[in-house]
Length: 374
Image (tube, rainbow, N blue to C red):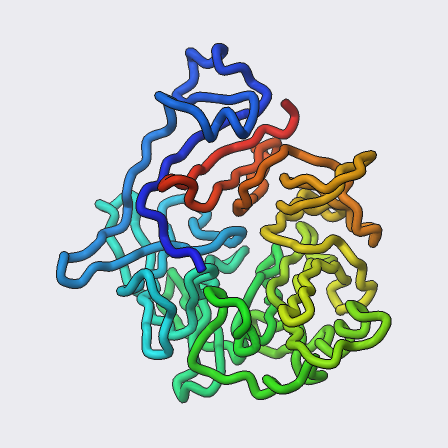
């Protein structure tokens, strides 16, 4: 489990641009990732802290915690945040977080809009702006504490409503959420929601747990694939005698026609990425040991890991492209690296760029840009 770093350093880079040809740039560029990590006296864009740490006797830790969801509103003025009041320990069932936004044009004013009892260190509470709407959504425990739910707040009107299931990823048009059993994610510390027990804990792959689609207007949901079905795909030669299979993450492709899903079974050393159609059909194997994915387009997905390069014989670590064709083979190595991060494709007209980061390396965390054409 990794907690928030002490020091954050941001570097912007285009890997193939020479270091000496940058006099007109406010940041330093490097010709390799290794050179970036070993650099000294670099120029980089200024960092401004926008969150208030609070008084010394009650420190506040404000973050967004994960990636690939909308933190800014469409104007770029309002920045969502989750504020918690503990650090460097596991989340407890009685830990609450405050949900709110920071006004970047009004003295960095913080406005609280709600609370959550469903959050973790790695993924927060899935706080995000709902696409194509004025609504802000996040996960919480129900008022009676018996289930996980999604809270919805209308930024313009202040209207509130609650949807009966938590969310993971929203479709590009904001109409449909993907979700899974958060109560089942007990085997991977830092990503579980505490406070509610898994009713199928003793079952390897329950038929009543899986991935659901939920209508973001009505709250009606439909299970599109069960863990039982997924187990048969992941273990074609028969199920293991013991273990604990669960869905870990989902993500829509840019058009909302297909999705990626990660499955885990720690006891049997299984961690795999699959794609499927929006109704849970046409399941295709993508790759093993997934980390932090990004759809490049409807047919290609990017992730960090150790894979055999096209035409190569031995696996190497880095950021790879995979095609959604069921082959499970890497199609391209974007850049070699031993250091995992959270990669995202910038929106048009800057979609030639990938933004990513690292975990803490020698007391520093690196934020960087990779220019794909060069």
